[in-house]
Length: 289
Image 1 (cartoon, rainbow, N blue to C red):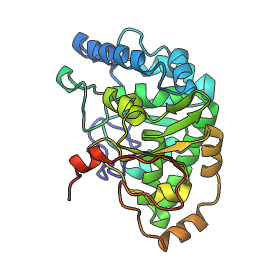
Image 2: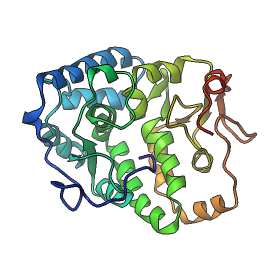
Image 3: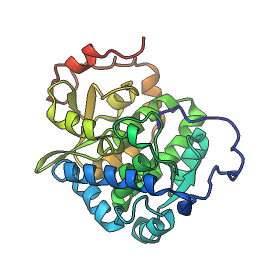
Image 4: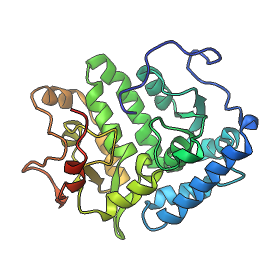
């Protein structure tokens, strides 16, 4: 969720909740081959980089299969594990629709897959990002509860005018979050685990800052949508991430109204610093002005 979900009416063929049939039988052999290529490449890379809940989720759902997974097969397992299910949507959906799906333990996923010449970069999330990136973590009961809580909080944020702040929480956790473990830093964010280049950059490069998770700090921090992140936030555990999401956000929103954003790539004295980055990559590739 990046705050850019469309606000128009559902397209033809979609239900009022924007869901569509996945149409699994219509995928071509070439499309299945793209999934297999991406899957095999990422799983080989992530063995010592992704967090244990993600790796266990991959195993539980058997996402390799015969190419692009059939959502019906995934849901048979996922519902039994955490009560979640994957629903197909035609693309980006309105924020209110997105939040309602999450609050009711439905994860909206695009059905299209990138072409072979787009293996390393795609602007709009496809089925590989949505399913490979997001769904394994939904097999973990704690993270599953966090996502549902986020959906409920999103509906409140819309009414309070704080959608931008909540979008940053999603971006810096669900999409680009890191976790501290006994074995070192590990990835749980979907935007990272579905990207070969960022799976390496976020852990190995000297350029980005790696800071301890703090809810208000995260919600004051803008993000890059066009490149690697200048700053990654590191949670101590999924349990502490869930606890942060279950508190009353009313006082947090009130506090945020009196606080300025922290510019991308900058640090402040109160930060819990794990690594101060050189920001070389960010300086060499500045974002849109």
